[in-house]
Length: 470
Image 1 (cartoon, helix red, strand yellow):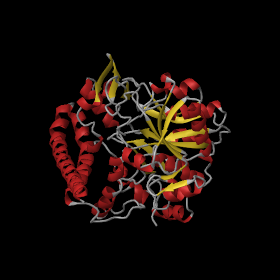
Image 2: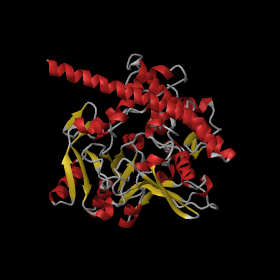
Image 3: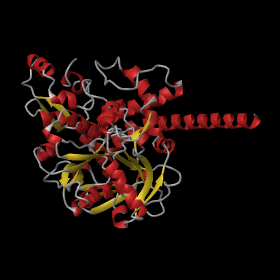
Image 4: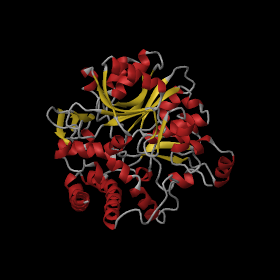
């Protein structure tokens, strides 16, 4: 088998988690590229002979990369770390309980992405003395002079730091800096991250890596896909700030009377805060896949299967109209589940029990894209790349109807082109350039989706009529 440099990195499947550069700083480095994505690459001094030695010795970074063919998969990791969870659903994965709900404390809920449960868990674990803090993504205020990324991982040890941490950050981050910071620490932390980042933490734990010995619990966020820094820049540019003038951005502002699925983007620049609803901005429909990393199209972990607890938005009819937001929760750790149960009894949390089918319905689009859609992509693009990630789902030419294949092919094309077109727009200092190149593709995609939805509605109607006649 080849190493991650010859497979994951060279073929463009690096997600930028930075695990390789944290574990092997003499062999790998992780940096943000010109498209606004973190990417790892091998240091030039590594030659083919050294690569063979690395593979022969089973270096830890080869076993900890979330897209490496040498690493354990999500099912294997869940079986190992979460084997005590009483339920094991074929789609949702292992779990103790499934919930939808929110925190009663409005000061927490108002600042949260959805119902505030993720933030509450971090605060409660610290209050109980189970952790010393939370490792999570935080917002940076950037100045024209300092530049830099708008978000980064930090260790938050005070209540105020935990509460002030970023809500959902549709922005690239990397782990190498924070992993080096906690290495050798005698403290205990809750780690919050995307499913692929949590998988990396689990893979390192499997190898007894000192870098993550301080991580006691993991919390995964539901993820449609990661975005490059260009997503924040595109939003800010439309609102009124060119990319170089962005100081900070809030992706999850809430507006009374507007349903939770319509986000308010708030951008801070030289003239203060400017904001707009996501529904009024071009390119914010997540189905379009603007600025998506290639790796995200080859991920099959919809439900954060390796984490102790998973939090996301409860995109269900009962909850979506509440502008304050409602959290969907998959609990897999008995200690965390006990905290939730106790708080529910005391009406600190307001939680409804859900079924696996409701959880799947809440993430239906993401589930379809990463099951049938992934089967199709694995078949279609295996020939395009020298190597593609090894997935639990197998490639299948006949996984979809022709019209659905066209939709997934369109998404893939839009994602690929958007990176280059926005970079060209910045070089030309013209957002209109980006519009002209991307609007025809976005309109074609919307037309295909409308046709697909009408076809689905017609099929449902025929099925209902058949049932009535029977």
